[in-house]
Amino acid sequence: MNFVHTVFIFIGTASISFLGTKFLLSFLENKRIFDTPNERSSHKKPVPKGGGIVVIGAIIFALIFIFNSFSKTYLPLIIATLALAIISWVDDLRELPAGLRLTTQFVLVTFVLLMMPPSEPYFHGTIPTWFELIVIAFIWVWFINTYNFMDGIDGITAIETISIGTGLFLIILLCGEQSEVALSGLVLAASALGFIWWNWSPSQLFLGDVGSIPLGFIIGWLLLQILPTPLWPISIIIPLYYLSDATITLLIRCLNRERFWLPHRKHFYQLATSRGLSHAHVSSTILILNICLIAWAWFSIAFPFISIFCAGLCVLLILFYFRGIT
Image (cartoon, rainbow, N blue to C red; front, side):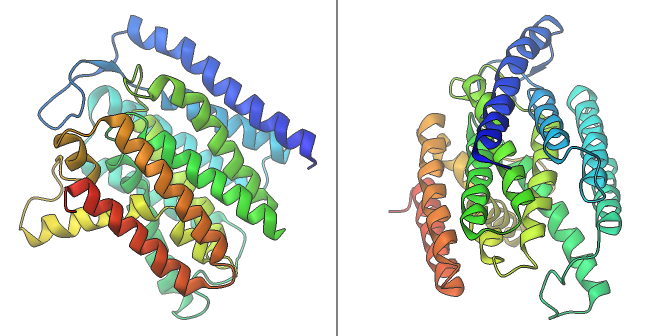
C-alpha cells in the first residue's frame, strides 16, 4: 500500500469517526442515553455515552477496506469485536452482571486465539505452548479490562489509543515488518482522533463500554501479533502507562484488603484530578509521557532491556506526580 492510499485511509477513517460521532451525539441526547454522575464519577453532570459505536464501527469498516476481504487472520477478530461491542452496549444500557461480561470476554478471546493461523511462540519457547495460550488469554482479558478501568476522565482513552496506534504504525513501518499491524494501528489512531474533538474536556460525549472494551480487545490483539517477533519490547513499552496504573492500583487495593472488584476512584489519574488537576492537564501529561514511551520503544530495537527499564522509570515518575509525591 503506497503513501497516497495510507493518507486516504487515515483521513477517511478520522472523518467517518468525526462526522459519525456528531450525528450519534444528537441521537443519544434525544434518546437520553446518559452517564449519570455518582460518587465514583469524575464528571458532575450527565453526559451522553456510547460514542464507541462510531469509533469501533469506523475501525471495523477501515480494516475490511484495507485487507479487501475477510481474511483468516481478521475474520475472527472482526466477529469477536462485533460480539463484544453488542454485549458492551447492552451493558451500557442496563448494566449486565460482571460474571457474564467476564465470561463473554474469555470466550471471545479463546475463540480468536484458537481460530488464528499458527504463529511463533508468544514467549519465544520459554514455556509450553498449551500453558502459553492460557497465560495469553488471561493477559488479554486483563488488558481489555484495563482499558475499561482507565477510561475515567475526558480524553484519556482517546489519547492512549492515538498514542498506541501511532507508535505501532511508525515503529513497525520504519522497521519494514508486519505492515498489516502497522496499518491497523494507523486506523485505530485515526478513529480515536476523529472522536477526541467530542471527548476532550469538557467532554460532550463518552465512549462508554461499547467503546473502551472493544478498543482494549483490538489493541490487545495487535500487541499480541508483535510479541512473538524481535520487536516484542514495543508491545510492553507503548501501553506501559495504562498497564502500570491499572495493575499497581489493583495490587495496592489487594494489599489493603479492599474489595478490589468494586468500582472506585483510586487510579493514579483519578487521584490527580481529585487533588485539583484538570482533566485536560492529566490527559495532556499522559500524551507527553506516551511520546517518550514511543521514543523508548524505538530505542528498544537495539537495546530492549535498557529501554524497558528507562520507560518504566518515566512511567513511575508520572505516577508519583499524579499521586502528589514530589
